[in-house]
Length: 632
Image 1 (tube, one colour):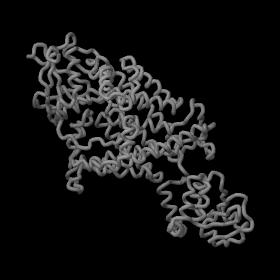
Image 2 (cartoon, helix red, strand yellow; image 1 turned 90 degrees about the vertical axis):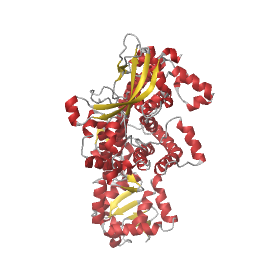
Image 3 (cartoon, helix red, strand yellow; image 1 turned 120 degrees about the horizontal axis):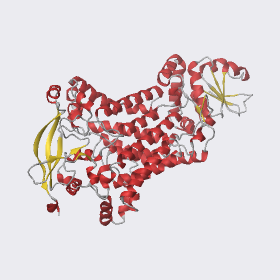
Image 4 (cartoon, one colour; image 1 turned 45 degrees about the vertical axis):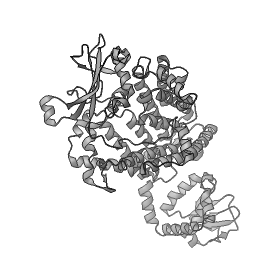
């Protein structure tokens, strides 16, 4: 139904029922979306100005009066009003051009108009009292601080180990790795291994990268030049990740890089925190802090991808301990936690106690984990209250994982991403800013849109691949992915695709004469059975972690292990610092060998009787005794 009034307003005027609480909430939302380009008034106040329109029509539906006098009603009026926001123009275009869009819209509008009480209840249930477009300044502020803290932890944790891992006297020296890569790959080595260490691979430069990362992390935490700090942090950590070889190949390393890269397009483009002085109270749309919606979308998509892939790879792995047997779900098969607590890389002492929990609780915990990882991620895109439920469940899962296992900064980083699900209205906060740097904000938003265009197809394929493993991407997509893969800015995820159902441990031993063998003790991985599992997170002892992976493979698959043995035979001070106990402090041994044991948690009675947290069984020799003479 269209009218043309004789007394049109100077700019578009939306007329609505002031006695309708449902209408009031959504009018508040549309007011913010149209940002002053449309006026709003109740029909109780304005009906007398437009005698051509019956009162009953005002009661049935909203009306939009244009400056030329043309008047629209119901869904068509809503779409016409929203077209004054460029990002919403597609609605009225669809109404006018897509067959079926208009009648469906009007049918839905009529149903809601006839059941306003029900619609109001649903609105309150999903959004709460405020349905206005959410703002995320609080989330932006604390996400960036937590990300800065995560970077700080990552740099400090690596700094104290870097000499022993990849230093000139370390397990896998960087100053040998890069020349070997250059000799094998030629000029292509620079593109495949993008690191600043091509300029300098000395120990001093590695310390410069770690120390510089610490300083820049502090700048990010205190809000100083956040976008520029994130650029520098990404370059520094990528350089160290490439230089770190196998020791920096973990999923949380690439997750930190992908998060850090995407955050560049979400962070404020300002130099000093004083540029964003805050006052409580309402803020008009013009003075709201600039938060890139495109940047926020990229980070939410990362969280969605991380969680959904982590869950789906478990179900599609073929490992029936995740409950998926012969294409159907079985409660009795949810046995993953029967193994996980004692077979994971570095369990905490709480994992020992969790292992003693009832079977039904372990099965429930596996089901809960799968539900949170597979179902809850879809709530990331839901209205406020469902989104907050998603944030709570995801954070709870990360805390539960952190309590029983040492997964360094992975849990903290995931929690940081979950903070982006909490908008300002959810915590009762509203902010105003002193001034905006609109040019930087727009440039950042346009760049984020460009990143979406490039990476969205790759992310879609990665997620699809979690549902359908071993699916090959289209050739063009694979080419783009190969170009980006070296920079770790778009990645696939999926921890514990297959549950480890046994625990082998490599115990390194040294001897002076080849008769009496003394064990090297690592700082965190199981060794001495009477030493309780420790808690080292968010620090990551990277050599201890690699020893866990080595126990799952043959010696030929881990050449770095030979480098470790060589350094022990040489008595490398840098490598010995990575260990808890060196049985040969004065002079290195003549021989080193590796024995292979099976480790399991003790029972409660065994702990009480023997004081041992672990029990072990010698299985075989992993590596025979070697000496420096043999290696030469």
